[in-house]
Amino acid sequence: MAGVYLFKVIVVGDAGVGKTSLTVRFAHGYFIENYKMTIGVDLATKHVDLGIGKPVKLQIWDTGGQERFRKLRPLYYKGAAGGLLVYDVTNKDSFKNLKSWFNEIQKYCGKIPLLLVGNKIDLANKSKVSVAEEKRLAEQLKIPCHRTSAKTGENVNDVFFKLAKFIYETSFGGY
Ligand code: G3D
Ligand code: MG
Image 1 (tube, rainbow, N blue to C red):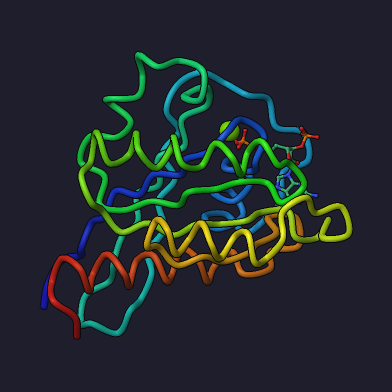
Image 2: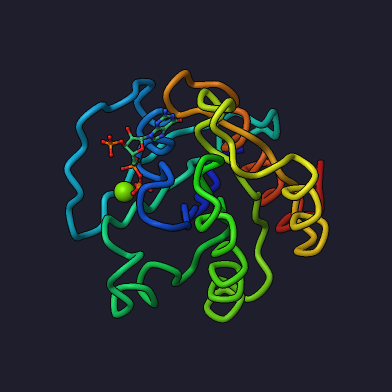
């Protein structure tokens, strides 16, 4: 089979939870220590092999400032095939805000594959959100949950890979 599947992926959550760090870690393989927030859309792309005969190209939309600049959001959400709903395990507010991010995604995108991601697990000793709380919310929203560290790279490839698989299974009825 020729060609590739192209999936637009959005990474959503409060400012500072690590959306850019996760994107850069996955797409480029390193952790950026001093990232300056810019306003505008940065597109990172990466191919993943799901063993389905064609590569899947993930186009990851990282919009610096979308947290604060509501006007950018419709463009940001348009055509998204799936997304990561990210919070910072050391920041309780970022966890509490997940529901409103979830509602906003549903408003613009309808029901698309999402994963709930608790980032910064390298700081687990400072965690403000228990695994049980996280699971409860994930069950309520009916989405799977995972924990990552953009800093160490733990689980980062895995969540993007799982999301790609989830999108593929949802769109094309599985393998
Ligand atoms: P955002 O894109 O969601 O706004 P960033 O978040 O990726 O810009 O990250 C915000 C801050 O959190 C950055 O620190 C970044 O280095 C840090 N960070 C991101 N992911 C992790 C992680 O997994 N572990 C740890 N310990 N820190 C992380 P600064 O200091 O630049 O604000
Ligand atoms: Mg960012």
